[in-house]
Image 1: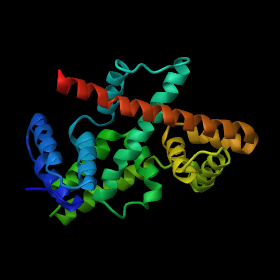
Image 2 (image 1 turned 60 degrees about the vertical axis):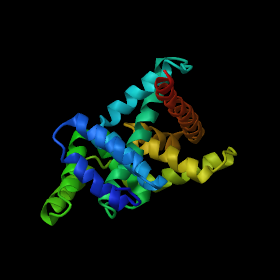
Image 3 (image 1 turned 45 degrees about the vertical axis):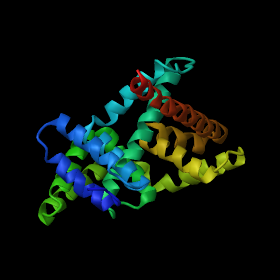
Length: 248
């Protein structure tokens, strides 16, 4: 059966998650990805496979490391390496948070997906369990409600004290990138904002600099965008190992 919508993708995913063995889940999810006739459900199925079946954030990190064997990254020092991985992990968490928003469409506004991403980055196993329960129990309203409640508790647990100021940081990211002439400054600013508020301690640093040393805040936001570009390049390189294995 071909898949045309995200709703059909969720139905297929429930069937996949009912399989007892992880390897069976991976095989069937790969087949069902190929059954997707449109790009939107295919992307969704790929993200579901990554988060719920194929190892989650750690698997994505290992894929980046594998890519570096084919296109080594230029790292100035260990601190830059750490920052690169922090940005990459935050981006992965933001992307995979969309799975939760598809399972629970009114969980948070799309602009606040970073709240889900923070919970995912800090307690991935628990979040995965709640989503798996909800998908497998889609016809059981009580179980779905229970899974959602567990997810909401997680989100509140990891909601930072500065959350009321988040809008001002988003605006600053957009304005600074716009002033720097970055194409698509609003979209890029939202991505930089998402990284800052998802990564551990980065938003606190940005807020402190905005309050005490605005020029340093500008440099921090621009530097985060530079790291974002580096991560994108690495993500493109991550496709190389797969292509090489296919032609080997």
